Amino acid sequence: MAKTSAEKASSTPSTPEYPLTTQAIVAPIVGWLIPGAGHIMLKRYVRGLLLMVSVVAMFLIGLGMNGRVYGPNGGDILEMLGFVGDLGSGALYFLAMIMGWGQAAAAHATADYGKTFVIVAGLLNFIAAADAHHIALGKKP
Image 1: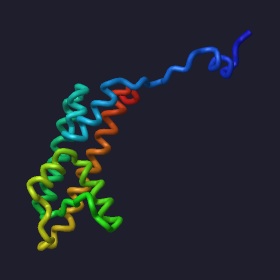
Image 2: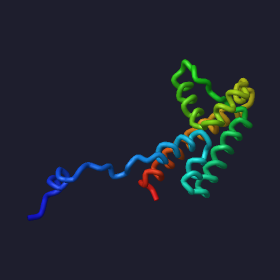
Image 3: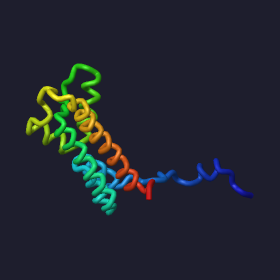
Image 4: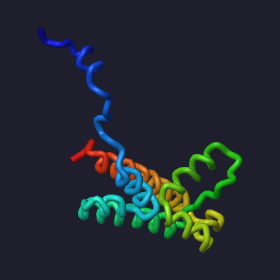
């Protein structure tokens, strides 16, 4: 007699469909710190280089437009969200904070666009780190 799906599930030990590996943990962390490096680590060279160039270019263009880089202790909810977006750039964010980039007052009309470029660069890097995690798990080819 054939077993039902409930009987099959109860008779076999539960193993995760996508087992968590060391690469699945390390790749997104490395990819967050250095944009695109998680994909390069997973031997997805073209995707990694495209992400690296995109995130770094957006971050530098944003700084070139006098975009603001948010610090960790903003009181306003929009400043906190801006900080989370900026933090997504990983090492670029820490370098900007150490060097004092993006701290000047907005003196040009392009500063608002620059701030948006910096935030979106970080958000794109968060998405890239999640993508590296899914590739390392085997969820994505």
